[in-house]
Amino acid sequence: PVAGIDAQLAIALREAPEALRPRLIRARQAASRLGRVIQALLAMFRSGVDPQRQTIRLSELLQPLSFSELQIDIRNDEALSADPDLLTAALLNLLDNAQRHQARQVQLILVHDAGWTRLRLHDDGVGCPPERLQQLRQALARQDYSTDSGLKGLGLILADLVMRAHGGRMELPQVEPGFCVDLNWPST
Image (cartoon, rainbow, N blue to C red; front, side):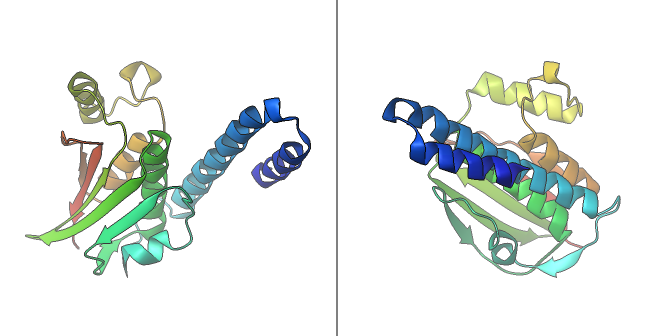
């Protein structure tokens, strides 16, 4: 259905008067985001309850994903052990969040240390005020995924659930500029 919506919006965009084009472009971008969210949720459901770890590389996970306006810089693309469907779902949503918050570039930094894998996603978007960041941290620590918690989208919730499924955790460090998410999980 999302592909059909996109096709109809593409046709409407071609035939629309100039005054309507910005609205149609925004609708098409929203439909594209919806498609990525659905893809991420399907990947998560297909993976089953327990993570099905495989040895993979970030570049392999990101290759089929499309973020036309977002430059993704992978630092240290060495092998890691994770469920590819779950990690892809988390990355898809976190990268979509970065793009929606005006990021043009995201650095993915992979580090293996003392039996743990850490993947840092640091974007150059608008960032988050310290008080809002603290609110997000508290909601995630409580696993309060309700709309009242301040967590409005699926990106952080999905990434937190994926890390918990891997026996790990997600952290939101304060950075300047932009926004940063650290995904941490046991290497084996």
